[in-house]
Length: 254
Length: 211
Image (cartoon, rainbow over all chains, first blue to last red; front, side, top):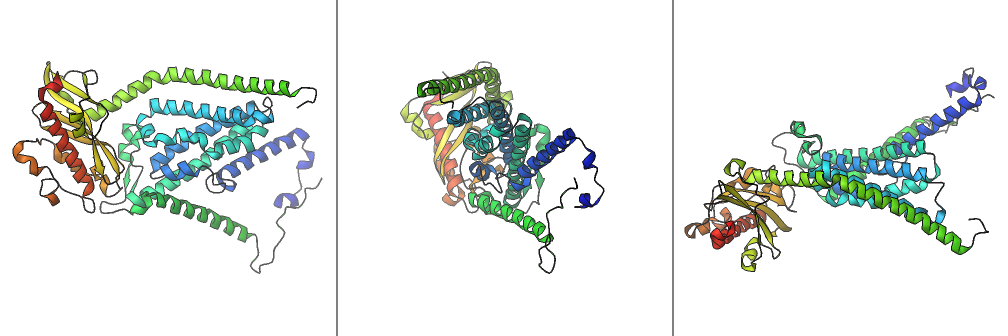
């Protein structure tokens, strides 16, 4: 709003600079959508099966989160590249083939280089194929956008999903087990054996947090927490008397 | 679709494009498979050897147990291992003499499903080590059979099964030597039974397992 009051430099800017700032606006929107506004796990509620199943500790969450992030980026990029060459009627089979290929490649690579973690995550790596968040982004975004945006969208949607997995995993591990980063060596090598944080030797752990209901309760609490923050932010725009003030920015002087 | 194309042409074109994409995927996947084949085999080998080293100290043998194997197919022996499908026995030797056996055994009566164990048995019939490979026991209660949750599984080390100590192979609640867990007796009972049966099988088969 303050920009509108200040003498604007925008009038002197040429059209390419305007296009550039529109570009940045779009990038900012992608980041905001991926991490917060349209977070795949907290808002879109997509991909809950792996989210709930492997979030029983931080390292598992991080492992599956990274795998999902990688698949989202690869699939978004490829879908964006071929978007003008695929007709509508075979669009979804082609997307599925791309996603399945990306997942299989990541499955093989994880099996080769993170063998033990791959063993723990088990079926949930191949199941990324059916993570609706991935086909959702391919269909709703990547198939209509240029490569740079699609790639960025894949990264931030994946990051948003991964963060929820890690936070939920950390909460469940902390409450259920009294530890953090247990078994981090599975991902980061032997040096990470000492990373494990213990809450205290006599902490018994709340079993419920580790069991499947703990996943549902934990995710529910995270969603509620996000909604609470959003509601607080929205309340700030309303004055104490409850009278709505204008929140739309004044139009730019031309 | 442009209207001057017939339905057949549209179908052929779509099918062609789809085939190209699937074909490319197959080529890519085969290439990655080729590339990762040997790292995966290496990783599997390393993982197996690491587990072996936990149940049978590597200084006790000088051969490669992964290459010195025997398939148990005799149903009367297999029933002791809790399975009906053939079990591979890995044989460790020192200077060509029997040093120990490594084999998987299944405890079919866990609290929730099968518990898969890896058991190491020295040539003289004593247990060199037991580790749980796979289980679905209750976290926080039955999962104390895992070595990184509790040292309980080490209670097996050095024990053997003779005619005069059979009753000792039970949890304390049942009059045996092994501790049970607070709130979980079924799990340790199942594991003790499975190790006992494994030893019984080895005693029954005798030296034939090294041939």
